[in-house]
Image (cartoon, rainbow, N blue to C red; front, side, top):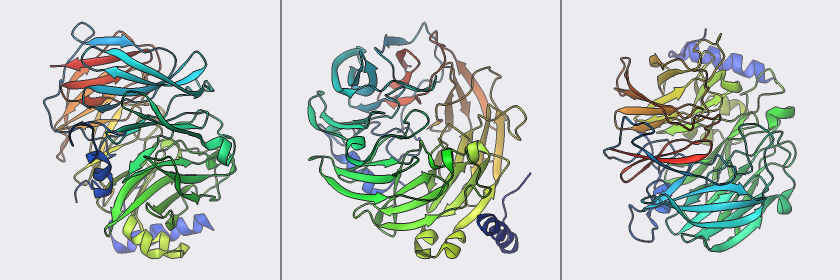
Length: 459
């Protein structure tokens, strides 16, 4: 079992081994916040604008959120069609996607009444390959005036808040067909006035940015990095951050971490080595998280977790050997395959979805110091047959974790170095596998998209 390397000599040894195999506070980027501030009514209207929220780190805005609920004291509506996207929220309206009658759809839901106010068709639904998947897995994003949705068919479309199309393009028609073995899962993200999409697959792979207002392409970074077979394929979502005052797009997948200038599309840094033994089937699903200058990268099908100094990676430029020195630590005894971690105040929180014989079996919740990789605490949730695809949500001093049966565990006292307390386990009647979407905060409570329903829970 490996431990984080805290001394310079031990760190050097780890980096040397890594090379041989190759042959603080949560940082809410001003660039990200600028996108949040554009709103139809006020800055606070875009309550949950992206898959992992305003900061992209899974942190709920301050509020008095419920900790306990059941089927009896929650309300729900059935979501038509098939989809697994996490909703985004502007004011009292939630937006999500679904494949209905052979068409991709963007859906608008009035949160007060849980009634659908529009269903806008946006191209042909490709359906699903995997039992957890659909043609509508990626979550939409919003700048408070527009909602941009992305589908397995390659359709990328911008609508206004009433569901009226503003522009609509198809990435696969422009840049090549989808070659992923499974269902597209990478969500678009917003930085400044751009929406950014990452395509990592066997064959042509790239990061591309479009102007939100016009739909015109701003830049494209051809991300052709070496990775074998399925390891070249990724379902992770890009992150926006800021390094030395400049907006940067971070992307993890295809055995590499890349940093790209958000304004120009220029590649600023590339770090390989996440698959030193060249395993053929190391497709990646979980996205990284960022705190300060440190990006924490889950990889190896949940087998490893690596902390990287992004500023040092940029300073390395094209020097591959210097890029390796940006690695702060790496652990092979902890990780997360599907759920993306959450991060705040220099601490990373993750739920293990590993096998029974893993060092931390399925349902183990862990907190690590982002700069050192030190495990601050582990705690086990109640045993369940269900696994975890939903990503954890930080709510004040609590963490909310939803399993694939739609059951949400609430853990309290997460901010210290002692084990927190499981205070509630909340079940709903829609326990059909598979709940994939993550819980979403809104002004008065939480939204939870299960396999077939959208639940609203309030105090």
